[in-house]
Image (tube, rainbow over the protein chains, first blue to last red):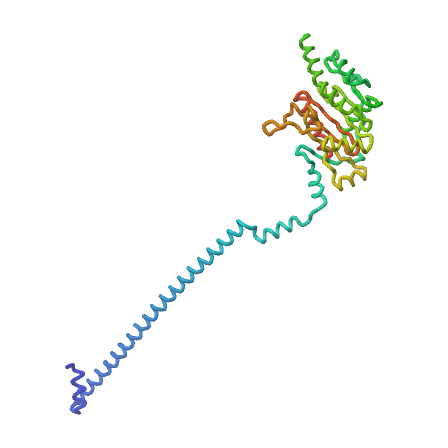
Length: 188
Length: 154
């Protein structure tokens, strides 16, 4: 039996001296303090338990949240990648529309100028005001309004090695005008 | 020396025969004026055979457009022509038959067997340049490029 129990029994019997009563009070107080300490320790333990539980819960919730967020982000990035792969982003479409909106006549002209049926064809426009300067035909040229049969017979190199220019036409036309027409076209 | 002269004669005759065929093909048409120029001097020492095909009336021009498969003009270009502007076109065709596309060898146009056609829609005339050598082709192309650049700069 402990001292406290003995004092408590004697306190109930009423046989405690003044000194023993003080000792009992001290012990009781200690016991109360101890009990209080024990209770407090229990609170702290509970609090710690609650804290640990809460902390674990928070960690778990945070982990779940982060995992969820990552999953969502992954799914978003996946979907955006797919969107980029399949369809251009909406902003790009808008930008393209903005760029292509002013369909100016100049652009149409360029496209239509490039329209010729064969790929090796080029079309351009000539200003009517710009006329070629009439040129004089090289004096070494020999011009004849002849049929093509006679032309073949007359082909031979000139004295200086320069072949002679021979003009044939199916209508009445001047050889000079034919030569000038060609130069007009080339030098416009 | 005689061999060289004979070679030149034979070469010139061959070149002229192709031009003769081209001339004969259209010589009898009354709606087309055909003019054949042999050895048209392009530059010093550089000549080429040129054939002009000019439509005298609308039927002749329609026939030329169909025969040479010329590209139709857009409404805008037609309006430009009505305002006095000319529309010029350059194309490369077969030397043997200028109405046909230029022969292609290894995905490139066979320059040796092709000729150059310039078309003036306003004067309704085709200028067919037949070149026998690479040098002739270079000069003709240079003229055409110069013309193109001058048109673009205007």
